[in-house]
Length: 538
Image 1 (cartoon, rainbow, N blue to C red):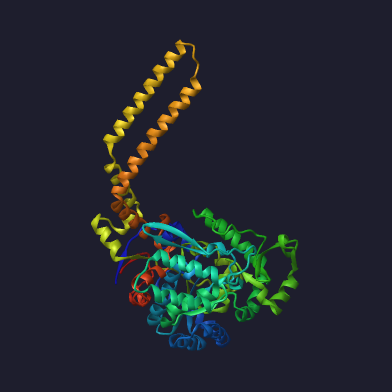
Image 2 (tube, rainbow, N blue to C red):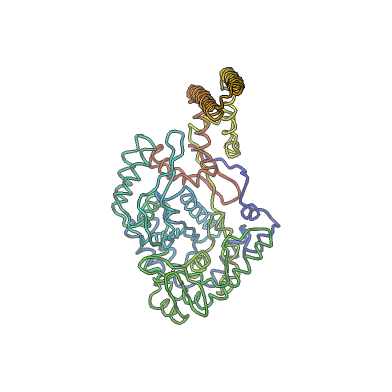
């Protein structure tokens, strides 16, 4: 396994500017990303240190059913004693979701190790599972490679209700069928049987999307002691009672400053990532596992579609007595994390970076400080087969991202077409057209008006020529199928759906090919949070 760092074009405007000095985006964040920022943030947290015993107990209680490793126990002890955290999170996707979920976890772990050494004090990695999210269409599928073709594989069960991932029971038969289909696409290897057994065993121990996700993530990262917590965990929700109260008391101010900040972001040349409004409550009300977004109207918190109405006093009472009935959105989740965890830095992707750019004044509204934002690692896995194809066609990974593999495929197809057969068919078409024209002239002289029949008859003949041309082209392409497949393999392995590999595939196709130690070897590499893109050759 070899790690290479390359300069890749950053297509996301906000992320590109975040890594560039003297750009407008920096005024929307509390800290620039450098060592002095971590020292300053650590000093800030030291001044605001509070008892973390209850928080530690909640995380321990959540993780014990998953299997608590000795390294995780060590990190829990450090957290209890006041350690800071690096936190990142993701929705509970199928088979851990796209690879960037794993990349986020690796980013959190790598940054926690780095800052522990630099600051000479414990920094603990925490993964915040967004189990409260209800958009199951975002997490119910994954992509595979079947031959050289890209396939979308989707969990067949659908819910009519907007239930949270942590409240949505899995149909284990449907999920088993999906896993079978996915692994069948991967193909049989020496590791397939063990992989299937592992996945089915974990599934049988899981009840919800979040259960399944958390157990798989714990298996992958328990050796590193990655701490896991579900945003929708009941005990965590009870712990969040007072933070919810603070949010409700300042909801109008939060909505106002976020809306203003987003408008300022647009004026600075960026987009509006949240489309915030001053009437937003930035909270959901949870009923029977289903989330209902609240907004403020006439001094009430309402969701008219669900016939929900609360006064501020009633919502504050819910926060005090039943905080499990409340849930955060993209605005309040970072605020909640800051009130619950001693966050040294938050690890997020380009999308999260954009909406965090609207939140600085929302932190201030709650007498909080925005933590350091650490962009997650970007990693592309290059298998031996793909590396050989790159060498064969003298391409780089960046060339494939630029579409050059597809360009070579189209050029190759153009070069192998049978031009002589095409010329002869075109000549026959021209001859037929001329003969029909002669016949039409003759029939007109004889006062035999068969224009419509002639046109239809000619169309039928021309269709047959088109059919013949297509069949010749298909046979030519079939003759050169192996070469064409190579170009498509390069594109779909490295740039599926015209996007980075990490946005499509999950890690289990690599476990199937390279074995269960793949993630262990991946974690042995030295990563640094910066603007580079890592290529991992295996």
